[in-house]
Image (cartoon, rainbow, N blue to C red; front, side, top):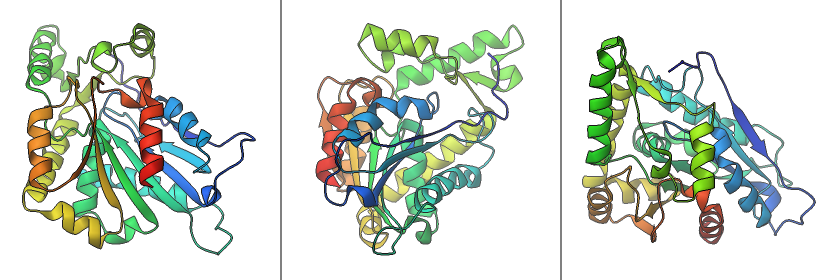
Length: 284
């Protein structure tokens, strides 16, 4: 399982000649990927979002270096902050203001974005109107945790796994989608990340502690009002990667705005980008 050390990938999608809706030229979307995925996984969603005419660009910036390693929470927050800055750094709008931004984050990226909302600097959220969290990794599914643990144990016998500090994620392609064509694409994706470091796991646990406590304490509603972005949760109901029951229970306790997608799986941005883009267009 090779590391992709120093590998940086970024994507910017722009509309073709399709006319934009009013205000579309002043809005951008920033996308934050998960643990296994990369910016290229947002391509189907970007095409559908731009086709609505509501946005001028969709921007996705990969975590720098080996995506399976996040050495600190500060590094995770820096990735998010720089992604936001990239959306604001281009030309100003006709009124002289920075463009308005909507954020779409999936899985691990959604977990990190939510922690950044609670513990990051408030200034980082200027010009950001909405935050859409798709299948956030607040509570991983217990079956997934068991698979990762036993795979780590098995590979330790040959010098990898827990012994090497490189823990395989072991997500099956059909965890993301039920369509064979998409599953085959995921399985053969050479840029897909298939392992994580101990540092990544430590940072993930810290992010989860922050998010769980803050939501339970009612900070979600407070943050949504004081930090500007409106927060929406998009939950596929057949997601085998996250613990949907525990996630929904916590979010309801925190009075979160939840949108459910019946019979959909974890890779909503890949298999059903039209549903997600249409929902976000109505909520922007």
